[in-house]
Image 1: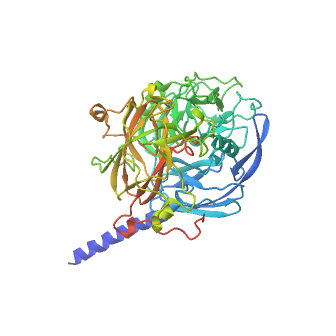
Image 2: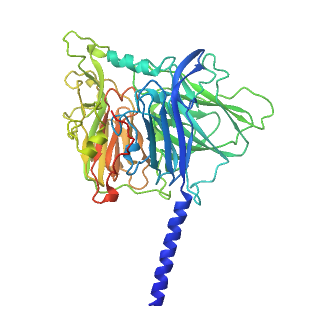
Image 3: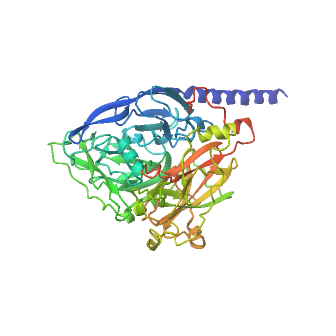
Length: 572
């Protein structure tokens, strides 16, 4: 009996010590974001931008897994504002997810709001950005999650780490650019430049001294945390004469994959190890667009920075890499399909085998009626408005209260739960002959969502369409990571393509590039109650309606239910 009591006491003590150790290692990390307009000089002109704490990109947030992050946001800008913590699970903290009218009402000019949430079960590179209109062009920054104390990377510790944020620049107020396009229903103006950590690089006018430079020591290995913060363009990233080893994507560890090019869509992150193993000299770092939509105008320019070896004997002209062609889909597809998950990683979970909800979702760009007037003419094809959709439902955000508040307080009339599991019409989805087909190109605005039970497993087949051209679509899911089981070109054929599913070590992501003229299959477990957006991360497509949302019901216990909103949640 005494022996049993001693064992019980010892086990309890060990459990308490382990719990206390975990609590001691976790910290509260606090930041203040002052968001306001400022004037900076780029491309030979002075331009007013909206920025956080006066910097572009905004401040880098560094936390450890298990920490609680507290960010006080003071909106001193003239625009409504929210901040989204892209890729953070927000377990039972959906009120802090950020998208306007999805999980909160906007922070009005002159007001403030404090985001507070715990970061758990994730390590790697994520980022934060504005989730209102096009403000994320300049309101964004890195969110780096390091292993908690006593834990390490599942790869050799690098000598140093550097966030690399790839951005997009307009010689205009980006809110005005978006509003002009929305007013006419036409496509917005393309950007004027791409940037690396806010700098356009020396290929652009007046930018020789606005080129990002990174000093390295010969023989050392560096961790580059690459973030695509561009609004509307996927990018190829290269370093002259150097290979890179991919070790994580979207804050999920991967099997090491050696490549000379990284392909990244808006919203995606890629962690690579770079070893400075070349002759001591200077080498260009470049980012140029991957533009898969044939015949569609885009910003066909290149941003570049410079890697300089500290022990280079003499100043030298940097070596330039060979750039991929803007439409090099084989290179993009090879990169995306060669990435696999690290099953020995600290947070690896195998993909669920049992599926509760099967969805087949067509995605693409179509049209909606210009207006009520019979003589109204808009700037899109056939005098109509561009209107993107999923399963021919073009999403429209509410404006009275957020969808999450409607869910929590059971308020009707804000959204409907009839988002279709499959398209209303089956057709030859990727056949270019269906482009501009009047029988299938029109769509209507609605706020349709998909309601699913807590802890159910969802499988989605994303199918690209050729309604108005075809392109690679980066689809982002809030609140969850998903396993990428397979992806390919043409129309998805379950009899053939299900045999390609990877159940052994599929990559995990929060944003996937659905191949141009192709398909992708993902699975995730809906173990987090609340309202979670799923949308294209091309900002040109978000206001056009390439979105929907999942309403995940509460779980059976208090610990699996969404808690009440914070008292200072912004009101509409």
